[in-house]
Length: 61
Image (cartoon, rainbow, N blue to C red; front, side, top):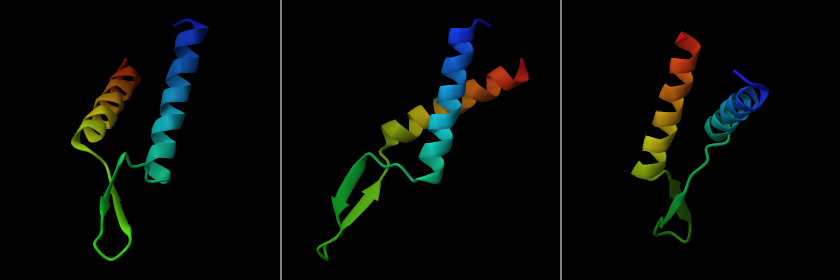
């Protein structure tokens, strides 16, 4: 692998780790009590899962 690809993989892993540790959400709903209820859309969950599977496939090579 060339250096640019290795940097991309490291950055992707760092982003995925951050998103899991910091509970990143892309949607918010009205909680009904003046607050909001953050959540992840199905699209974001599918993207996260896809990236995770791709990273695991790299580890298997």
